[in-house]
Length: 265
Ligand code: PLP
Image (cartoon, rainbow, N blue to C red; front, top):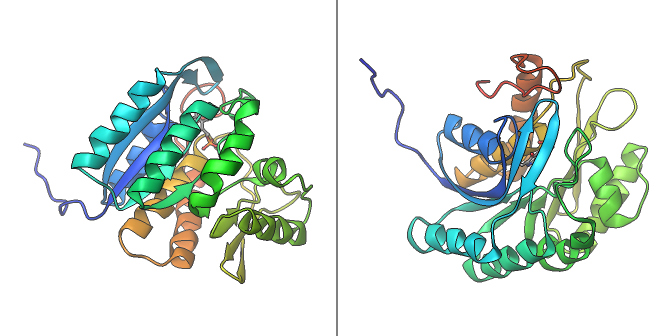
């Protein structure tokens, strides 16, 4: 017989993101990470992807009113300690959620998801200006990878010192703190956290594996969950890096392409 031996959830995290039918990224990865770390996860779906480890074959966005209704339903009853965003897809969705976040006032961890590992656009090109204007200034933490940081700042990033310059530029654009993930650097990856005026580098070892699907979503969700539990930002980022490194190393080798990381880390 099943026996519950976990404590009750501590901290609430709302993820506003897209669905990945393959279960490796998006809302599915977010809810797994939030649950495993012991918090309560709620979700607002911005778009549905038909997807597996080989790629995205279709995207369906619900009517904008329905996105708004999901947000209202969660926030007026359950509430949340932290909001985490992932795939937002269109300018219309960004403008709608940004307005509601502003009136609700929770800390936001914003992962500026733009392109899936297989190359499909998860954010429409014309939505980038709306993202910069409406959402980026609400980020308590913005978590771009290097191509996303380049698109948002217009800078080109090849070194850790370029990463620091881009992170500071993103703060000037309105983000309170910025984590630039260095997986796209040559050689071993180094992440850079710009925490207020303090720059913290987090070196890592490159793991030679195609099974990295969902790393961005999982990292942002782990950080959001630890923040909801009262952990400081530098500590949350350090723990998330350990979590994702282990999750990549222990990937379960599911599917025939870019498989998911191990969420049971
Ligand atoms: N959100 C959704 C719905 C996705 O399908 C994907 C990738 O395919 C992502 C986010 C980003 O995934 P990753 O964490 O691998 O950057």
